[in-house]
Length: 202
Image (cartoon, rainbow, N blue to C red; front, side):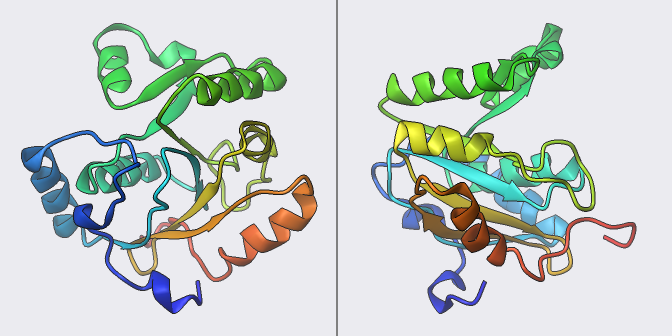
């Protein structure tokens, strides 16, 4: 996170016209209040593109979801995310759908990738947030699905970091992926050096 251009508070007015939007002044105000009361800030830049993937790491807590949703609502950005299909039942399911949830059956990883590529190809605007480490943990192994989706759909990847030590959601930089996953991962993981996920202290 050594790019000086990224050390700027992210505000709704900084979001480009091509980025999908949701919410209003009331929801933005509520999200801003929640972030302020919890001591969190959103710093960085959101790429001005109608379709892109956001990868969030390190994924160490269920609080990651709440924080990223508050950040998205604060910035007036419509974000979609994948969740286990069994979660989308009853009233909770309706709420999760309203929050941008997309139910998926994770039994077939290749199928999930294909479904998301098709969703991007069939949408004029779509922002999909993915935690590439999958399940929560202190040192999860990164899965390649997010990269495959981005390459096959020809869309950029916005790097987002959950920095619990400083209570900051870092946004950026944005990467246009190549066919070389390993090379791209070197560049991607370098941006998360020194970022601490949630511990018992935070």
